[in-house]
Image 1: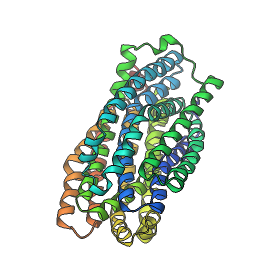
Image 2 (image 1 turned 60 degrees about the vertical axis):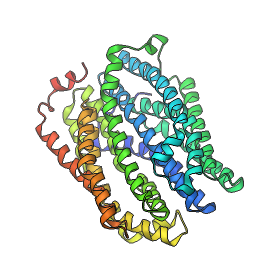
Image 3 (image 1 turned 90 degrees about the horizontal axis):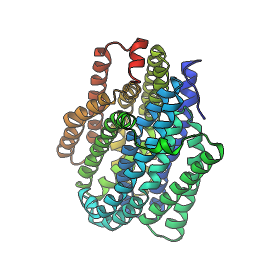
Amino acid sequence: MEKNLTSGSVLRNIFVFALPFFCSYFLQTLYGMADLFIIGQFEGAASITAVSIGSQVMHMITVMLVGLAMGTTVMIAQAVGARNKRSVRASIGNTITLFFLVSLVLAMLLVFGTEPITRLMSTPAEAVPGTCEYLFVCFLGIPLITAYNIISSIFRGLGDSQSPMYFVAIACVGNILLDYLFMGYYRLGPVGAAYGTLIAQGISVALALLYVGRKKVIAIEWPDLRPQRKVMGRLLRIGIPISLQDGFIQIAFLVITIIANMRGLTDAAAVGIVEKFISFVFLVPSSMLATVSALGAQNIGAGKMIRARRTLWYALDICIVFGLLVSLVTQFTADEIVGCFTQEPVVIAAGALYLQGYIFDCIFAGIHFSFSGFFCALGRSEFSFLHNLIAIVTARIPLVWLASNWYPDTLFPMGLATCAGSVVSVVICVFFFWRLKGWGTKQHAFSLLK
């Protein structure tokens, strides 16, 4: 169901859209956190490391697919704002065709690449079997993961962030129950976590398709599925830079994981746990990115550039306040947070230090996430790709590597080093925002739709 978000209170529209998205993203993140938490109650560091490495690889693949689908969200939102039903149907139909093919090819390639990927991650020897089993099962489920995230992107482009929340809520409960069944009762280890995740994703897709079929909220016809050069070109022009951006970000995190893995099993487990918690904390910045993209695109489609910019300002305020608060609280609760995922004292001690340094990244990431959402709404996603690539190459990876070598007995400097990349991104985003001209006119807004 389409929801027009181009009128009324800007701040209210942000919360109306962002809160359901936040809940959906929280529940999806809870999948990985639940896997890690539950396996930590029944298995040791090797299994914890296997699930953390495997889920990080899957997270990278998922966010790249979601990034590619950002072209869908932006195009649909702009068309909704412009009241162009034909463009909405064409965008949805071409998205279905594109991602059906992408998911099948990707699944086949990844299944055959399971062992090389595991080796590439410098997985500790004790965790190799579990990591391979986990990834093999998850790779088979790539089409299901793709289907759920594409359906969600379509709904969000239509201004509806609530429906995906309901789908994933039921699936999340199922995932947690299945985790206890497979890992607790049957003691299947890491592969049990993969089975639970795969079945839960299947539940999400089935519920979403059932809802779409009964409510007829997406009215497309067979001709809409036929690839259209102009539509497919815009989908890819917006989506590919975001997908590559998210991919490079995740590669940077994977490189950090590899660096931690080379330090031994204790640090590998500690970094894996902290990455899971950070993915939860980053839900707010990620929600603002999606919100600014969708709401900004609708307002741009309607020629309301001032409202689009106001959406960005509110998102920045929310992210900065949230980042400051969570960074302060975490300094005093880091041990307890890491202790929720493991009972091993050495892992808790190492993870707490890493988290105390890493958590400050939430402040700066929130800022550049919000700017990235605005760039996407404008159809200029290449700016988001560029600032992230520069930050990763010049700061995040080099400084983490140096910190690991200079401070082999503590993870705290490595945590701080991760923030450097986001600081660089913020500087570049502000520069782009200041330099680009013509953002305040209706003529510019309508030119984006051509």
